[in-house]
Length: 101
Image (cartoon, rainbow, N blue to C red; front, side, top):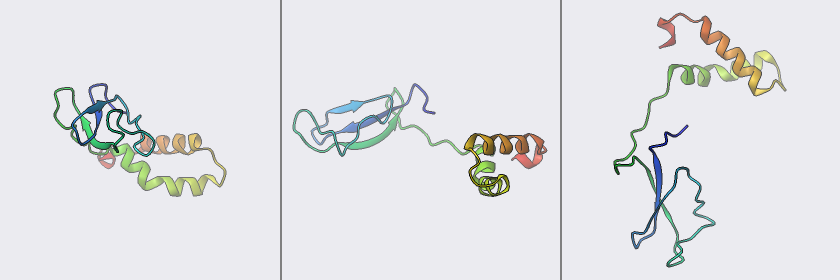
């Protein structure tokens, strides 16, 4: 989830910038109000104007990425996502601290 200090930026060639707290602007549907030109996504920036550093994945998210498919097969087709994630979180809790890294 984005931190409140991060703001995605959009701009048009004439340097008018549109800052939002989310990526709420769809560049295929929205154009610049001044010149009707296409908008360009500049990325996410902190309030001081510096680019937001990309965060590394957590141990749990990497574990889920590796184990999700096998857990889904084990629990059977039609199992809700909520139940698969509960099963994975129970497995994660059972791992030792050294294997969580």
